Each structure stands twice: as structure tokens, then as C-alpha cells.
Image 1 (cartoon, rainbow, N blue to C red):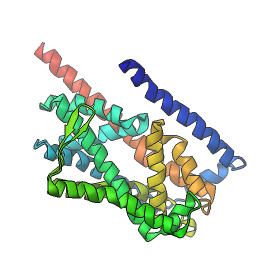
Image 2 (image 1 turned 90 degrees about the vertical axis):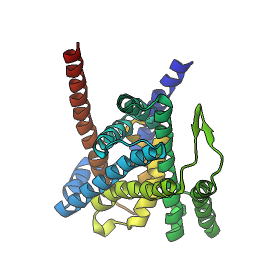
Image 3 (image 1 turned 180 degrees about the horizontal axis):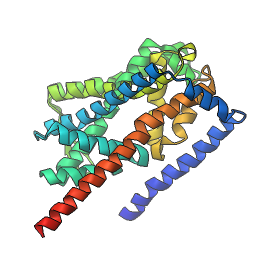
Image 4 (image 1 turned 135 degrees about the vertical axis):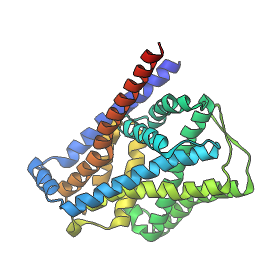
Length: 312
């Protein structure tokens, strides 16, 4: 049964890629590749620099995810080691899909060498997932408060619906913080007992989650030309929905899912310019980190093998 469950997620991801790619093809029929290339080449050097800085902010925040989880467990590890583990974890899981499963494998391989038990590593995985979810809900609610018209990009709804959706999204982070302040009982997730964090830890989660998502959305925002850019709050709101849909789909790298949902939600932006911005996001947030992470893994494993040979 366990093997069947392990095989399901890759199949779900491939099915999501196939279906979303078909929808994307229907959406982009008639768009010339030369237009996308021209839009990509039109991204100026200063905007590339800001997009790269946004990438650094996002991956720096992801390293903080792990540090906060370890602090919750009262474990102390160096920022250098945790940063490397976090970078490799997210670079691989973002590209492979099924991020919880792939992230758990990488973290177990690394953190077990530092004495963490399987249960503790399971808490780290759950804790980082909760941190991301809190950040997405908090920012999602705030973007709807600032730009209620965002909801209309997805569904036709009455004016009060955006306020109701904002309240619903903000309720979960508020209750989580309340649980930390009032010391609510522990929550069981699968076989792991997740204890509500101390208030300072919960406060850090509320800060770092939005930082990561703002950094990731900033890549797309800075890659869009100023003339057709709808503004950062709009880009952020659409990114939150699109990136969440891509993660839920388990499609490797959210391939097709991210692009289709962005195109449907931003019909006011020329498709060639939007695709060029999304290609920039894929290059900086997914492809470049994947290449670097593979080099890091190769160096790490080579050192371990060398140490084992010397020991033998």
C-alpha cells in the first residue's frame, strides 16, 4: 500500500502537467514565439537585478523557515548548514513536485547526520509547511483587503464576497497566533505530535512566510514592463493563487499550471510579456537553484564517500 501511495503523486503530477499544458496550448494558439523572445530580451538590466535580489529574499526566507522550526524544537544548528539544507530542499522539491515528500527525504538525509530523530525531522517538515500556509493565508487576506477587485479575476462575485473571503483567509493565522498565546493543546498530524509554538516563534512564522512569497512574486513583478504592469498587489495576489494551485497539483515545477492560471487571471497584460516574466521566474526561482543544488549535493556526497573510504 505504501508503494502504491508513493506512485500516486508522480502520476497525479504528470496528469496535472498534461491537462494544464493542453489548456495552455488552447490559450496561446496564435501567439508567436518571436514575440515572447522579444519581450524577454526587453527586460532591462536594472529590472534583472531587482528580480535577482527578489530571488535572494525568497530563498533567504526559506532558510529562515528551517531555522525557526529548529528553534521550536530547541535545536541549534549553524546558519550555513541550515541554509544549504534549505536551499537544496526547496530547489529540488519545487522542481520535482510533491514538495512535502521530496522535502522530507532531503531533510532526513541531512539533519539525521546532526542527530535529529525521524520524529523531529517530521516536525520540521510539518512546521515549514505550516509557515508557508500561514504566510499565504495572511497575504491572501491582506491583498483582498487592499484590492477587493482581485477576486473578480477568478470568479464573478458580489462586492461583499471579497471582504468575506479576506476575513476567512485572515481567520486561520489569527487563530494560530491565539493558540500560541493561550497554549492550546497539541495537534496530531499523521503520527506526529505538533505542539503549538511559543509566541515569539509563532510571530517569526507570521513574518517569514510573507517575506518568502513577496520575494517570489517580486521576480515576476520586476520582469514585467512598467507600461503593462498592473501593480505589485495585483501581481502578488495572482501569484499566491497560481503558486498555491501549482503546489496542490503536484506538477513538477507547477509546469503549465502556473502559466495557465496567471494568463487567465491577468488578461489585461499582453500574453507575450506575461510569459516572458514567468520564464524569468522559472529561470531564477526554479532552474538556476536546481543546477546549483545538484552541484551542492554532488560535492556533499563525494565528501561523505571520501570520509567513509578513509574510515574503512
